[in-house]
Length: 97
Image 1 (cartoon, rainbow, N blue to C red):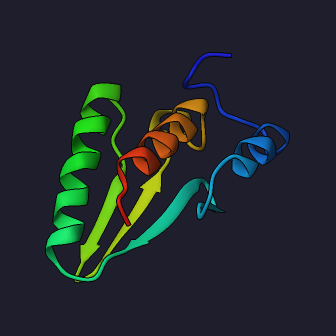
Image 2: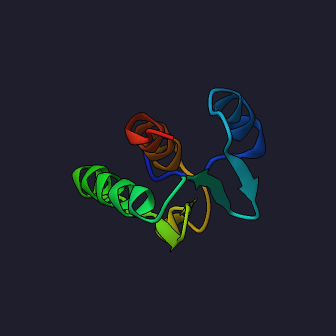
């Protein structure tokens, strides 16, 4: 399976079991990260940006005081692919919350 092939519900379920705090909302993989201040989210977004650029796969990010909401989807595939799960794992790796 190529990284950008659309995953079926049966393929998504075991991948979800390997992630902590993520949920599927429609055609997106979503997680909220909470922080104690404003600069924490900003630094986290910068770390996400570096990983996303390296993987050439870019999440939608919502940044506010004390929080970042990450939304992943492979737009060219119109849903979730292995690349979204790889990026979610990489994002978890740079989170320090």
